[in-house]
Length: 112
Image (tube, rainbow, N blue to C red; front, side, top):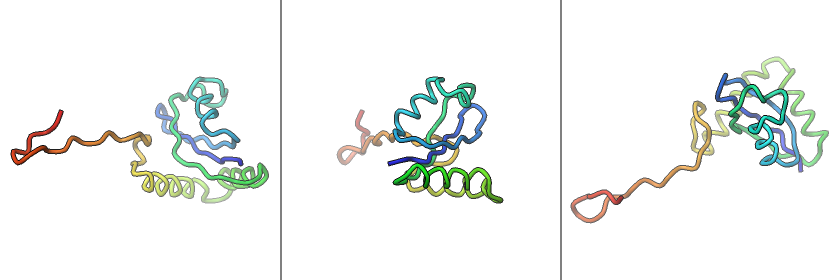
Protein backbone atom coordinates (compact mmCIF):
# COMPACT_ATOMS: atom_id res chain seq x y z
CA UNK A 1 0.00 0.00 0.00
CA UNK A 2 1.29 3.47 -0.93
CA UNK A 3 0.07 6.82 0.28
CA UNK A 4 0.04 10.11 -1.53
CA UNK A 5 0.01 12.77 1.17
CA UNK A 6 -0.17 16.54 1.49
CA UNK A 7 1.40 18.37 4.42
CA UNK A 8 0.83 21.99 5.36
CA UNK A 9 3.50 24.04 7.09
CA UNK A 10 2.33 25.89 10.17
CA UNK A 11 5.24 28.30 9.69
CA UNK A 12 4.64 29.57 6.13
CA UNK A 13 1.34 27.80 5.25
CA UNK A 14 2.88 26.20 2.14
CA UNK A 15 1.97 22.72 0.97
CA UNK A 16 4.23 19.71 0.42
CA UNK A 17 3.15 16.66 -1.60
CA UNK A 18 4.85 13.29 -1.27
CA UNK A 19 4.51 9.50 -1.48
CA UNK A 20 5.32 6.92 1.18
CA UNK A 21 4.59 3.38 2.32
CA UNK A 22 4.47 4.35 6.01
CA UNK A 23 2.50 7.56 6.54
CA UNK A 24 3.05 7.87 10.30
CA UNK A 25 6.80 7.29 10.05
CA UNK A 26 7.16 9.74 7.16
CA UNK A 27 5.25 12.49 8.98
CA UNK A 28 7.55 11.97 11.97
CA UNK A 29 10.61 12.25 9.68
CA UNK A 30 9.30 15.52 8.24
CA UNK A 31 8.65 17.00 11.68
CA UNK A 32 12.00 15.79 13.07
CA UNK A 33 13.93 17.63 10.34
CA UNK A 34 15.17 14.53 8.49
CA UNK A 35 13.65 15.61 5.15
CA UNK A 36 15.78 18.32 3.50
CA UNK A 37 12.93 19.91 1.54
CA UNK A 38 10.78 20.51 4.64
CA UNK A 39 13.21 20.87 7.55
CA UNK A 40 12.98 24.68 7.40
CA UNK A 41 9.16 24.56 7.43
CA UNK A 42 8.48 22.58 10.61
CA UNK A 43 5.91 21.95 12.13
CA UNK A 44 3.94 20.22 9.40
CA UNK A 45 0.38 18.95 9.63
CA UNK A 46 -1.07 16.13 7.56
CA UNK A 47 -3.99 17.73 5.72
CA UNK A 48 -4.78 15.08 3.08
CA UNK A 49 -3.92 11.57 1.95
CA UNK A 50 -4.99 8.94 -0.58
CA UNK A 51 -4.22 5.19 -0.68
CA UNK A 52 -2.90 3.39 -3.77
CA UNK A 53 -2.03 -0.23 -4.50
CA UNK A 54 1.14 0.59 -6.45
CA UNK A 55 3.90 3.18 -6.39
CA UNK A 56 3.21 3.87 -10.07
CA UNK A 57 -0.40 4.90 -9.35
CA UNK A 58 0.62 7.12 -6.44
CA UNK A 59 3.42 8.74 -8.48
CA UNK A 60 1.03 9.48 -11.35
CA UNK A 61 -1.42 11.17 -8.98
CA UNK A 62 1.44 13.13 -7.38
CA UNK A 63 2.57 14.34 -10.80
CA UNK A 64 -0.96 15.40 -11.73
CA UNK A 65 -1.38 17.38 -8.50
CA UNK A 66 1.94 19.13 -9.03
CA UNK A 67 1.91 19.83 -12.77
CA UNK A 68 -1.51 20.01 -14.38
CA UNK A 69 -3.26 23.35 -15.02
CA UNK A 70 -5.57 24.17 -12.14
CA UNK A 71 -3.77 21.74 -9.83
CA UNK A 72 -3.41 24.36 -7.10
CA UNK A 73 -7.15 24.90 -6.88
CA UNK A 74 -7.73 21.14 -6.98
CA UNK A 75 -5.34 20.59 -4.05
CA UNK A 76 -7.10 23.14 -1.87
CA UNK A 77 -10.51 21.72 -2.78
CA UNK A 78 -9.38 18.19 -1.83
CA UNK A 79 -7.92 19.43 1.45
CA UNK A 80 -11.03 21.37 2.42
CA UNK A 81 -13.30 18.38 1.72
CA UNK A 82 -10.97 16.02 3.60
CA UNK A 83 -10.79 18.26 6.67
CA UNK A 84 -14.54 18.79 6.61
CA UNK A 85 -15.01 15.00 6.78
CA UNK A 86 -12.57 14.87 9.70
CA UNK A 87 -14.38 17.70 11.48
CA UNK A 88 -11.49 20.17 11.18
CA UNK A 89 -11.11 23.57 9.56
CA UNK A 90 -8.45 24.40 7.00
CA UNK A 91 -6.88 26.99 9.29
CA UNK A 92 -6.05 24.39 11.94
CA UNK A 93 -4.48 20.98 12.00
CA UNK A 94 -6.75 18.06 12.70
CA UNK A 95 -6.41 17.26 16.39
CA UNK A 96 -8.17 14.93 18.74
CA UNK A 97 -10.99 16.87 20.28
CA UNK A 98 -11.48 16.81 24.01
CA UNK A 99 -14.95 15.90 25.19
CA UNK A 100 -16.81 18.93 26.47
CA UNK A 101 -17.90 18.90 30.10
CA UNK A 102 -21.58 18.10 30.45
CA UNK A 103 -23.95 19.79 32.86
CA UNK A 104 -24.81 17.75 35.93
CA UNK A 105 -28.14 17.63 37.69
CA UNK A 106 -30.98 20.14 37.64
CA UNK A 107 -28.79 23.12 38.60
CA UNK A 108 -26.69 22.73 35.45
CA UNK A 109 -23.38 22.76 37.32
CA UNK A 110 -20.51 21.89 35.03
CA UNK A 111 -18.44 18.83 35.91
CA UNK A 112 -14.74 19.48 36.42
